[in-house]
Image (cartoon, rainbow, N blue to C red; front, side, top):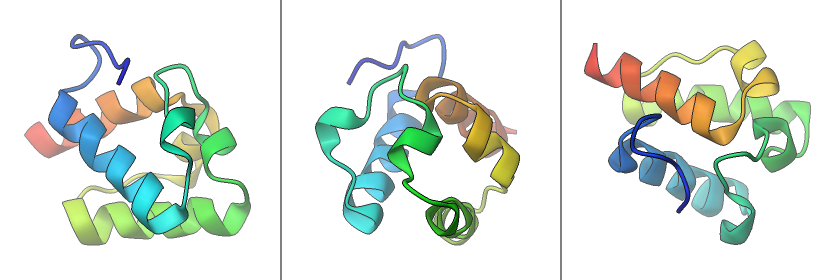
Length: 85
């Protein structure tokens, strides 16, 4: 995976990758640091489901706006901060 160590811990990035691949059937090759979350989550329903899944699985809140606007690396870093803090 090409998420830099300065953006998010690899554990958090790996967890999010696992959710994308296992629950949302995203091609693992598509999960890159510069991939937009909206490119990975094909439609609005998937965005909402991902926000719910993050809350259920990781106890982390994420807004639909974050899922629409951020790249995978940016989103992973934000989730990582919330898990740590």
